[in-house]
Structures are given as C-alpha cells and as structure tokens.
Image (cartoon, rainbow, N blue to C red; front, side, top):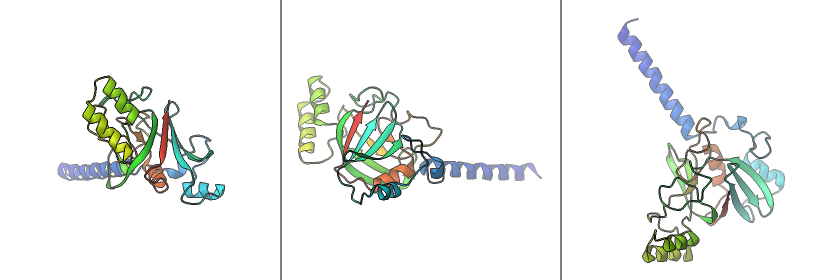
Length: 222
C-alpha cells in the first residue's frame, strides 16, 4: 500500500472518529442512557415519563419546582413535597461560592425562575440541544451590586422592572448573565466545566425540558 493511500485512509478514519466523538459529546446520554444510574438512589436509569407514571402524576406536573444542590452536584425535580427524579449535574469551577459578578466562574445561589426556553438545532458543543435560562440576576443580586458600586442605578431599575414584568433581566450588566440549565455534558468532562450554568447530559435535559415550563421555580443551594 502506497504512503499516499495510507495517509488518505488514516485521515478519513481520523475525521470519522472526530465527527462521531462530537456527536456523542453534543448528544451525550442518547446512547449511554441505559448505563446511567439515578444519582440519588443508584437505581438503574428510568425515563422521566415512566417515573411519573409510576407515581401517578400526570402532565403538566402539579406544583413543579427544581432544586440544585451544589455540594452534591445534583438537580432534583419535585412535585410539591414529592421527589420525582434526581439528575447528576456539572457546575462552574468555583461552584462553592455564590456568583457576584461577570466572569467570576461561579454558579449563583438563591431563588430563581425559568425565564426562557430554547431548543438548539443543531446542538452546540457546550450547550447540547436544550437551554433553560434562569432569571439571573435577581433583584437581591442587583441590590447587592448597587450597594457595592458594581452597577448603576439605571442598571438596578432595569433589573427590577424586568422582574416586575416577568421578563428576563438584562444579561449584560457587570453582574453577569446567561445562566441556564443546558446539555452538552460528557462522561469525561468532570463536574466543573461550565461558566456558571448547570450542565447536564443532553438526554437528561431533553426529557426535563418537556416538563418544565417558563415560570418554573428553581432553588439553588450549597
């Protein structure tokens, strides 16, 4: 076999491997789903629809809210007091600290709402296929920022007005923004690869996305 032919074959194989690796990364969980276990109980993975059926809970899920526990890297889905399902998540590099400003690499803490939903077609490398935006910064974040001189009075009023109207607050103030629950996670990426958001396997965020409407409450704790 000539050197040129070998080079062509190896190059084609390398390109195919690269494309396959990207697809597995972007849609992580689609093929590995049967091997991913419930992070809270270590039971075999069950699709959310099956879990809801077992619990006798119909769609739309009543009293739906989400809880993020930063220390255990877990996202819990609740119906009132009933825990429905737990998901393993990734956070930012400095996830132990509360977010204070843009670029600090921290995941915010407190009470938020899902303010926007978006399907990403095609999937993006670090966002996967679904994006649930949080209404960060909160009014408390804005008040703190105003007191510390991070933002102007105009910025504070803009954030406050957005929350009053049930809209996404400005995302370009010194407090930062673009905090979301999104996909794109992979098994070799670790637990601290986001810029402040909550990262999930794409398969997990895809099923969660179908049940979480805009306005859903999400509580982020240490």
